[in-house]
Length: 132
Image (cartoon, helix red, strand yellow):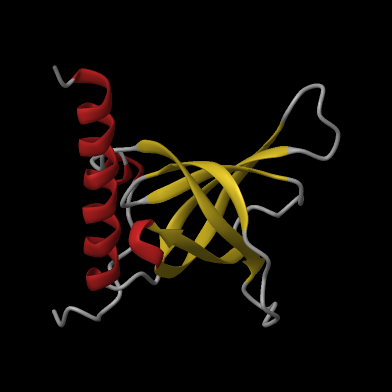
């Protein structure tokens, strides 16, 4: 398979094979149909090679496809699509939800780029908290 070919759909078991980490990143989230330039907001994201979890203020619908753009370390612009799996309302915060989404139509090259950055986040965290 060419390195720019989209990866296949991931099963629930496959999604959990990827290491997950929390990181604070600038992110822009829009519906796939929205072609305007989205604003970046720095948010805490729970991210893996298979998907993302993030707090949002928009009630996206399950199965809706979102366009995500993240700014990774070293100003790397990372664009991908994600399918909304579910949206959990947060108690005590009106119009605030925990978005759970899986990456779709991601090229193998982009998935490898993302995984490299996730491993870098993990390494930096370990060095910061456990080095002597």
